[in-house]
Length: 146
Image 1: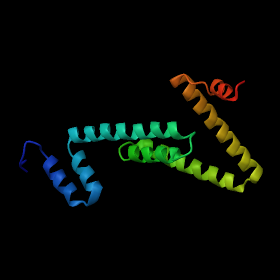
Image 2: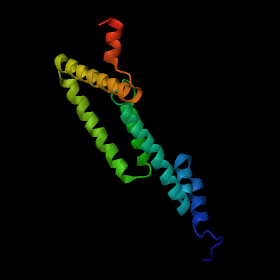
Image 3: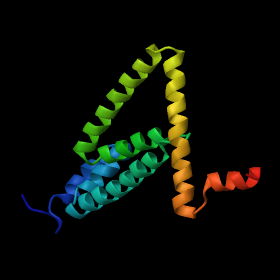
Image 4: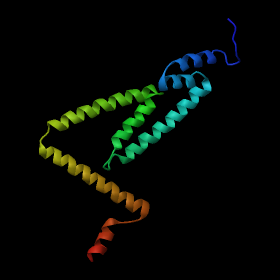
């Protein structure tokens, strides 16, 4: 069998990948060469890592922190098997936590809410104090005239 191009089987693999529809065909086309596969791994790794780290920073605050973490893991799972395992583990832990939380009474739910709010307050206080040099307690005393 003669090879028609200098790239060997890469052209054949790209043609087969192009016949697949959607994003999977496009990704297979990129993966069909060593350079493309390495570049894709690096790009997916950087994007997924930024999303996971950003999501973890957002977790203590109201908003989509955990959603961004899981989305980042899903992005990483497209190229890394370990990320797929972590994503599946995270989903099972989240489901277990949700079921446990639903079975608890209002007392436990209120305690969880208060602990979450306290953690959020400490993080906001520390972020303002150590990054901007603003001490909320000192500012509060000034406003109250104490």
